[in-house]
Length: 271
Image (cartoon, rainbow, N blue to C red):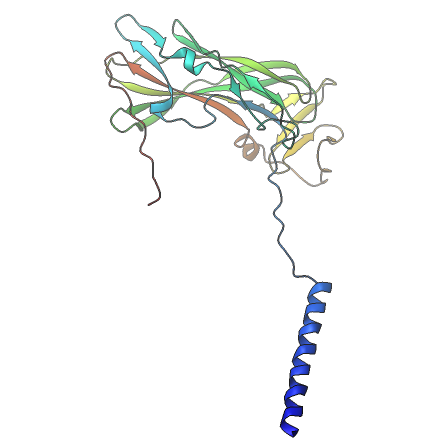
């Protein structure tokens, strides 16, 4: 009988401890890590048809005839369909806008032109800005679909935009030179449109891009109201920021008239 009393006493003690532990956990729940939503860079954002990084077997093909020095697009109608951007550039991703635009890619003479999409998400009206048009040319191995050799950058050309109000979007026309090459050669041409590092507000104030803050900083003058308060001792690194400017791109395959059809790059699949 004596041993049974001790057994019940022990069981009661364990029960009391368990109840106490549950009460403590209820009053002081364990810390739970809440993932912060990914911030979008609040700046002037360009978009190009190369957003999904298509490979050579999926890109628009431009055929080059070296004898007559002429270029023409293949399946231009297919690639010039209207693109729906979904919630990528909506002001409120929870309520996406039905934003659509058409690349309208065109080859005339030795130049190619197409529309890029640009939207002002900086929270400030833009009176004037200079975006940068860049080009890169690389040789493609038609058998593997992979670039090989050096990537040759072209000249950087300024593309000006004016009166782009906060939240406004528009299509801008980008033009680039087409490369000349041997009849059997296959090249990759990438056209990029980089956001401006600085744009001018309607009152003449320059607004400068700052990647670390994920918003904008005004200067000289009062800080922009579109983001956090600027720390008095904070100095942005212009080189760091310029390297992280938002950019849209479009990639084309430029194939000689005697070149074999480029194949898609191999893809890795989970076993």
